[in-house]
Image 1 (cartoon, helix red, strand yellow):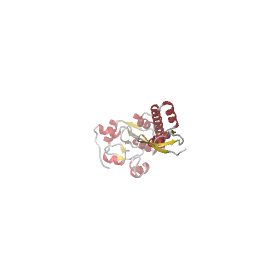
Image 2: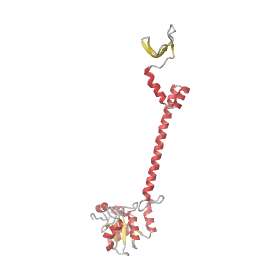
Image 3: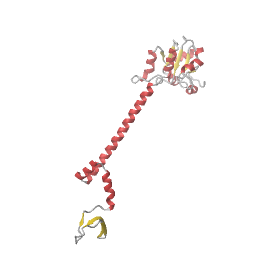
Image 4: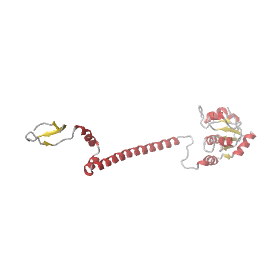
Length: 238
């Protein structure tokens, strides 16, 4: 038996053919694939076993189509699993952040009038735009702007004082005690506002004032947006 070798047939070289030495006609046995087909053989071996089985049963063209679909479906399933995991992690983070807020947001509520409802529940009077204008013009009420300090400096209601719900350097209690405790009596009328009906900064400040013993807190829920939309005057600076 001679080892594997090459032989030129019809001007072409055949590789990997075992020849029988005793055969005078050099009858070839067990032909193998040519070297340029080795890459396709290796690729077929790397496919899943189910793909190779389908290839044997259904033919080359059909098996190739089934294999592609199988691989695509596997990739899609993996991507879907990753998306589901990302959604679950995001939901868990949202729940955790909301839990540690000073005023956690409710999961089910009517958001259009949420601020007004909660204000009424804790005994705070809610006023509309016209009533808020009367309080400001009369000068009888102390007006607190619960928006951030920088926003307050750009524009605010006339004679309003800045009392952010989340001061930058101090707590709400520290800022109030340092700047306003001596100028507001417990029974004085205090009006609090923020940007509009969807912000809760004014609600947080109103709750704080009620907890400090102030009995005449008024919430202007429509806020600065409604005030400027009506064309009422504003002031800038601090």
